[in-house]
Length: 399
Ligand code: 3PG
Ligand code: MG
Image (tube, rainbow, N blue to C red):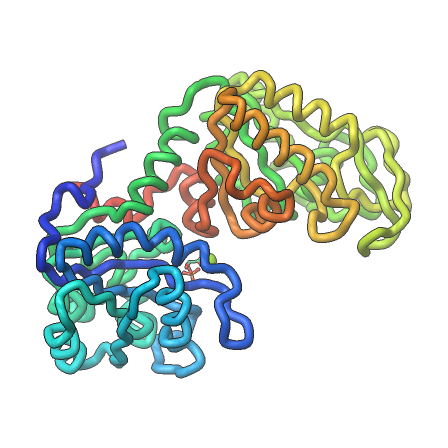
């Protein structure tokens, strides 16, 4: 990994520091329901204010499509930042067309202030990586710090162009995340096992293609596995499967064979006849799935097989649940394997890195979100990283 700059490369003392955060957090009834992204930002904010810098937070929130829209105002997230920081936080409204008033508010704020600027996506230039908007952003700070790995797959004015206009570095959360990902796939201890689940092969083709070239074993679960089972000539009954991707699935298996990446598919499954919590269910061998049934989880034999593969590994990378984990008892495979990875991590046997929207929810459901070596809160950015792509927001911090 080419080296990125960190806070150690900047002198923050008394400076106006633009901090690109990801305050794109879930909100229901005006309240933040998961503040993980905010909590991870706090160490960087503290580094700045402790040396009398001003931390000026830049973030998008939702997808307001380049227009000022009160529904997407970042003001509603400020109380959650105050709570996580334990210190007052100012809010600065702006339409991003004219930033003179915002600049004045920043200048007038006392040293050590934390300020949140209005949603960067209120201006159409944000998503276009517009250099003029980036110049207006840059005029509000002396330094730029990016602590938003989860937005780093976007080449936007606040993640990319502005980073090229000011001395720029990764914040502490971004730094921790990049180092964890490096341990996961960049330069991992071998053997490496990847566990990939979720519904669709079609959304994870690039990811699977990249993983087989990097890992020693690849566990495939979730409805994605049904596509592979079907492609291998097995019946999957009424299960969710992308039957038109059979050839693609077989090509992936052939390529994996060629590079000696073991593909581990379910050998049995939990089958139900209705897609609902606590629906009556039975275990079937993968070669004998009831034609009227639906595979909703990996079966007990598969769970043991996966645990055995984890025993062989020094590094585990995970994206996507193994079954319909939102509905008991079809959460069993995901929960058992997640707890097993957590236990192996605690015992010092593996480094474990997980990420992606559903994955974090699944690990939280299993009670092990804090027990992996690193859990990324990124969705799209984590997937692009697993696909082996370089992320524009990270690239802009190198150099
Ligand atoms: C996310 O929540 O995935 C990031 O904040 C990026 O948001 P976006 O998908 O709207 O760009
Ligand atoms: Mg997204």
